[in-house]
Image (cartoon, rainbow, N blue to C red):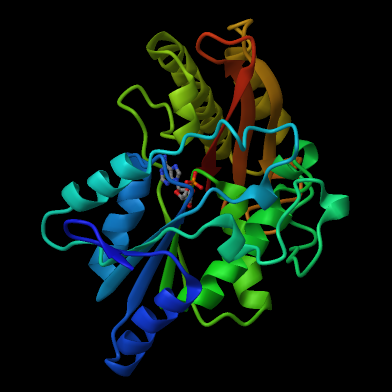
Length: 311
Ligand code: AMP
């Protein structure tokens, strides 16, 4: 156990359990914010909400290998622990984060963890029916990894409330179902997406982009907003709205930049995540997208996701 200037740093499961046991006996509520680090204002808004709603707040920083496929960016994913701790120490004035959980991979995966799903051994969690579409199409092991690590973390921390960002809309649906189906006694709270002033959704992966590319990427949210305006115009005429006109408009706008590669733009039912052809006012839809954009000084692309909720 280490104490940085203000925050308690916990590195093992048993240290977290010890910290938590005392709070159970004192009847204190605990808010938990799981992250992969490289913290930005989006993460901070989750932390702020947790500080507001709970007696104590714990943040985890863990780049979870099991949600990355072998060809993905696990090795290059930004790891900035010192800066993250500084942010957690300096960002919040009224109330401070109480603890940060920074486990090693071996602590979270005592059996070890291969990125090759066929070689993985041990217990894994999968939310069937909600993990295969959208992000799951090109990242088939992603939500199995997320669901597994979130289950582990919730079992370790046993928080009163756990905080997730709307930016990862499918993740929110998956986790809501996971917590409900496995009877986990934690409330899931979803916090609105925090954006740069130009509208670009904040993301740790934005660190891969040049300043100029970040400006160009602001077109993604502009396109989503255009799609939402089109929905609202059609909704006012009465009846259901054809999702294809919205999807086409968004694709048209994003593809004006020929360096961008559209992986998907979809309109999904807010609970089942099934494709919706006709959007029913009152039920609404999640309109989400994944766009690949050029990384700074590299021939590779960064994959950005964003979404907008239609009511
Ligand atoms: P990550 O570190 O990317 O795994 O994200 C940790 C949590 O922060 C997840 O619940 C994300 O949805 C949330 N998050 C990431 N970016 C944002 C953002 N721009 N606004 C709000 N929440 C976010």
